[in-house]
Length: 301
DNA sequence: CCCCAGGTAGCCA
DNA sequence: TGGCTACATGGG
Image (tube, rainbow, N blue to C red; front, side, top):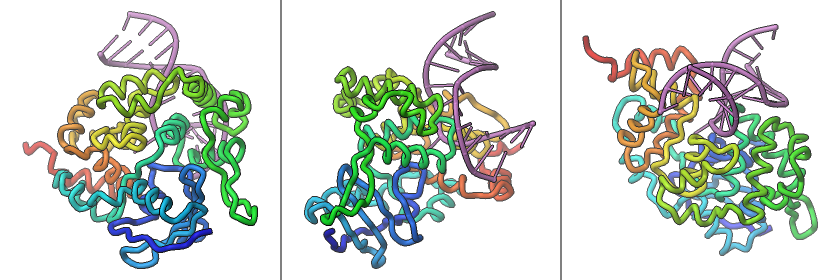
């Protein structure tokens, strides 16, 4: 494997790779993060405040380029978070997640993983992703033939696997959705590349044509897989956060919340969403309750 | 045994 | 459009 150091400021591996935006990275020892980008295996660790150590099967120049793109290292995290609103919850989320970056994931990977995500806990999504990678992904080995990891399966490999084989990976009713979507892409009946050339509303509509893809999963794919940083996925957590903290005692519709979020959180609304999601999910119930009771959005009587 | 999990599709008024 | 409900499975 090739080894080198990579300059990476404002990047916390655990917050970024362990967050709910990606499901295939492993951290066996609390220090090193292992996983694949495409067919290339990576082992990453923090070496110095602004430096990562990288071990990879990829050729170094290619690996640097892949990592810079994946972690968005060309973008200034400081200037992105400056666009977030200044309310206390948002600021607390920022302070608790310094170095959390949004990843530029492969669109197919994001699509497949988030089709699996519906009504599943993050820990279980990881298990399903690992299961289909081991069953249908390609083996990634080092030069001596030692098995390092399995790549994420292609649409074609999931299409050929068949629905019942997917079901055997314990994904339940999601097997049909994932298999049908894989078939459509494999047969060229749905073009993931074209989706990326559309404007956000049209791209969202296109993704929602796929089986198992509704508004929430479409927004996740737009945000994590296509780089539409204003896409704002509304899952059960974000709905709870917006209703409890930003509209206490009002319970607005999801549609109203969507409109509010896209306006209030700004140009990188989806980025801000990830900070809120990870922060609130890590809180215990009583801490959240206190935050809500101190919300500045409570109407003054 | 209970409730819930980064939802969606199908059905009904 | 808006409001149910089934859907598979596993964690807490």
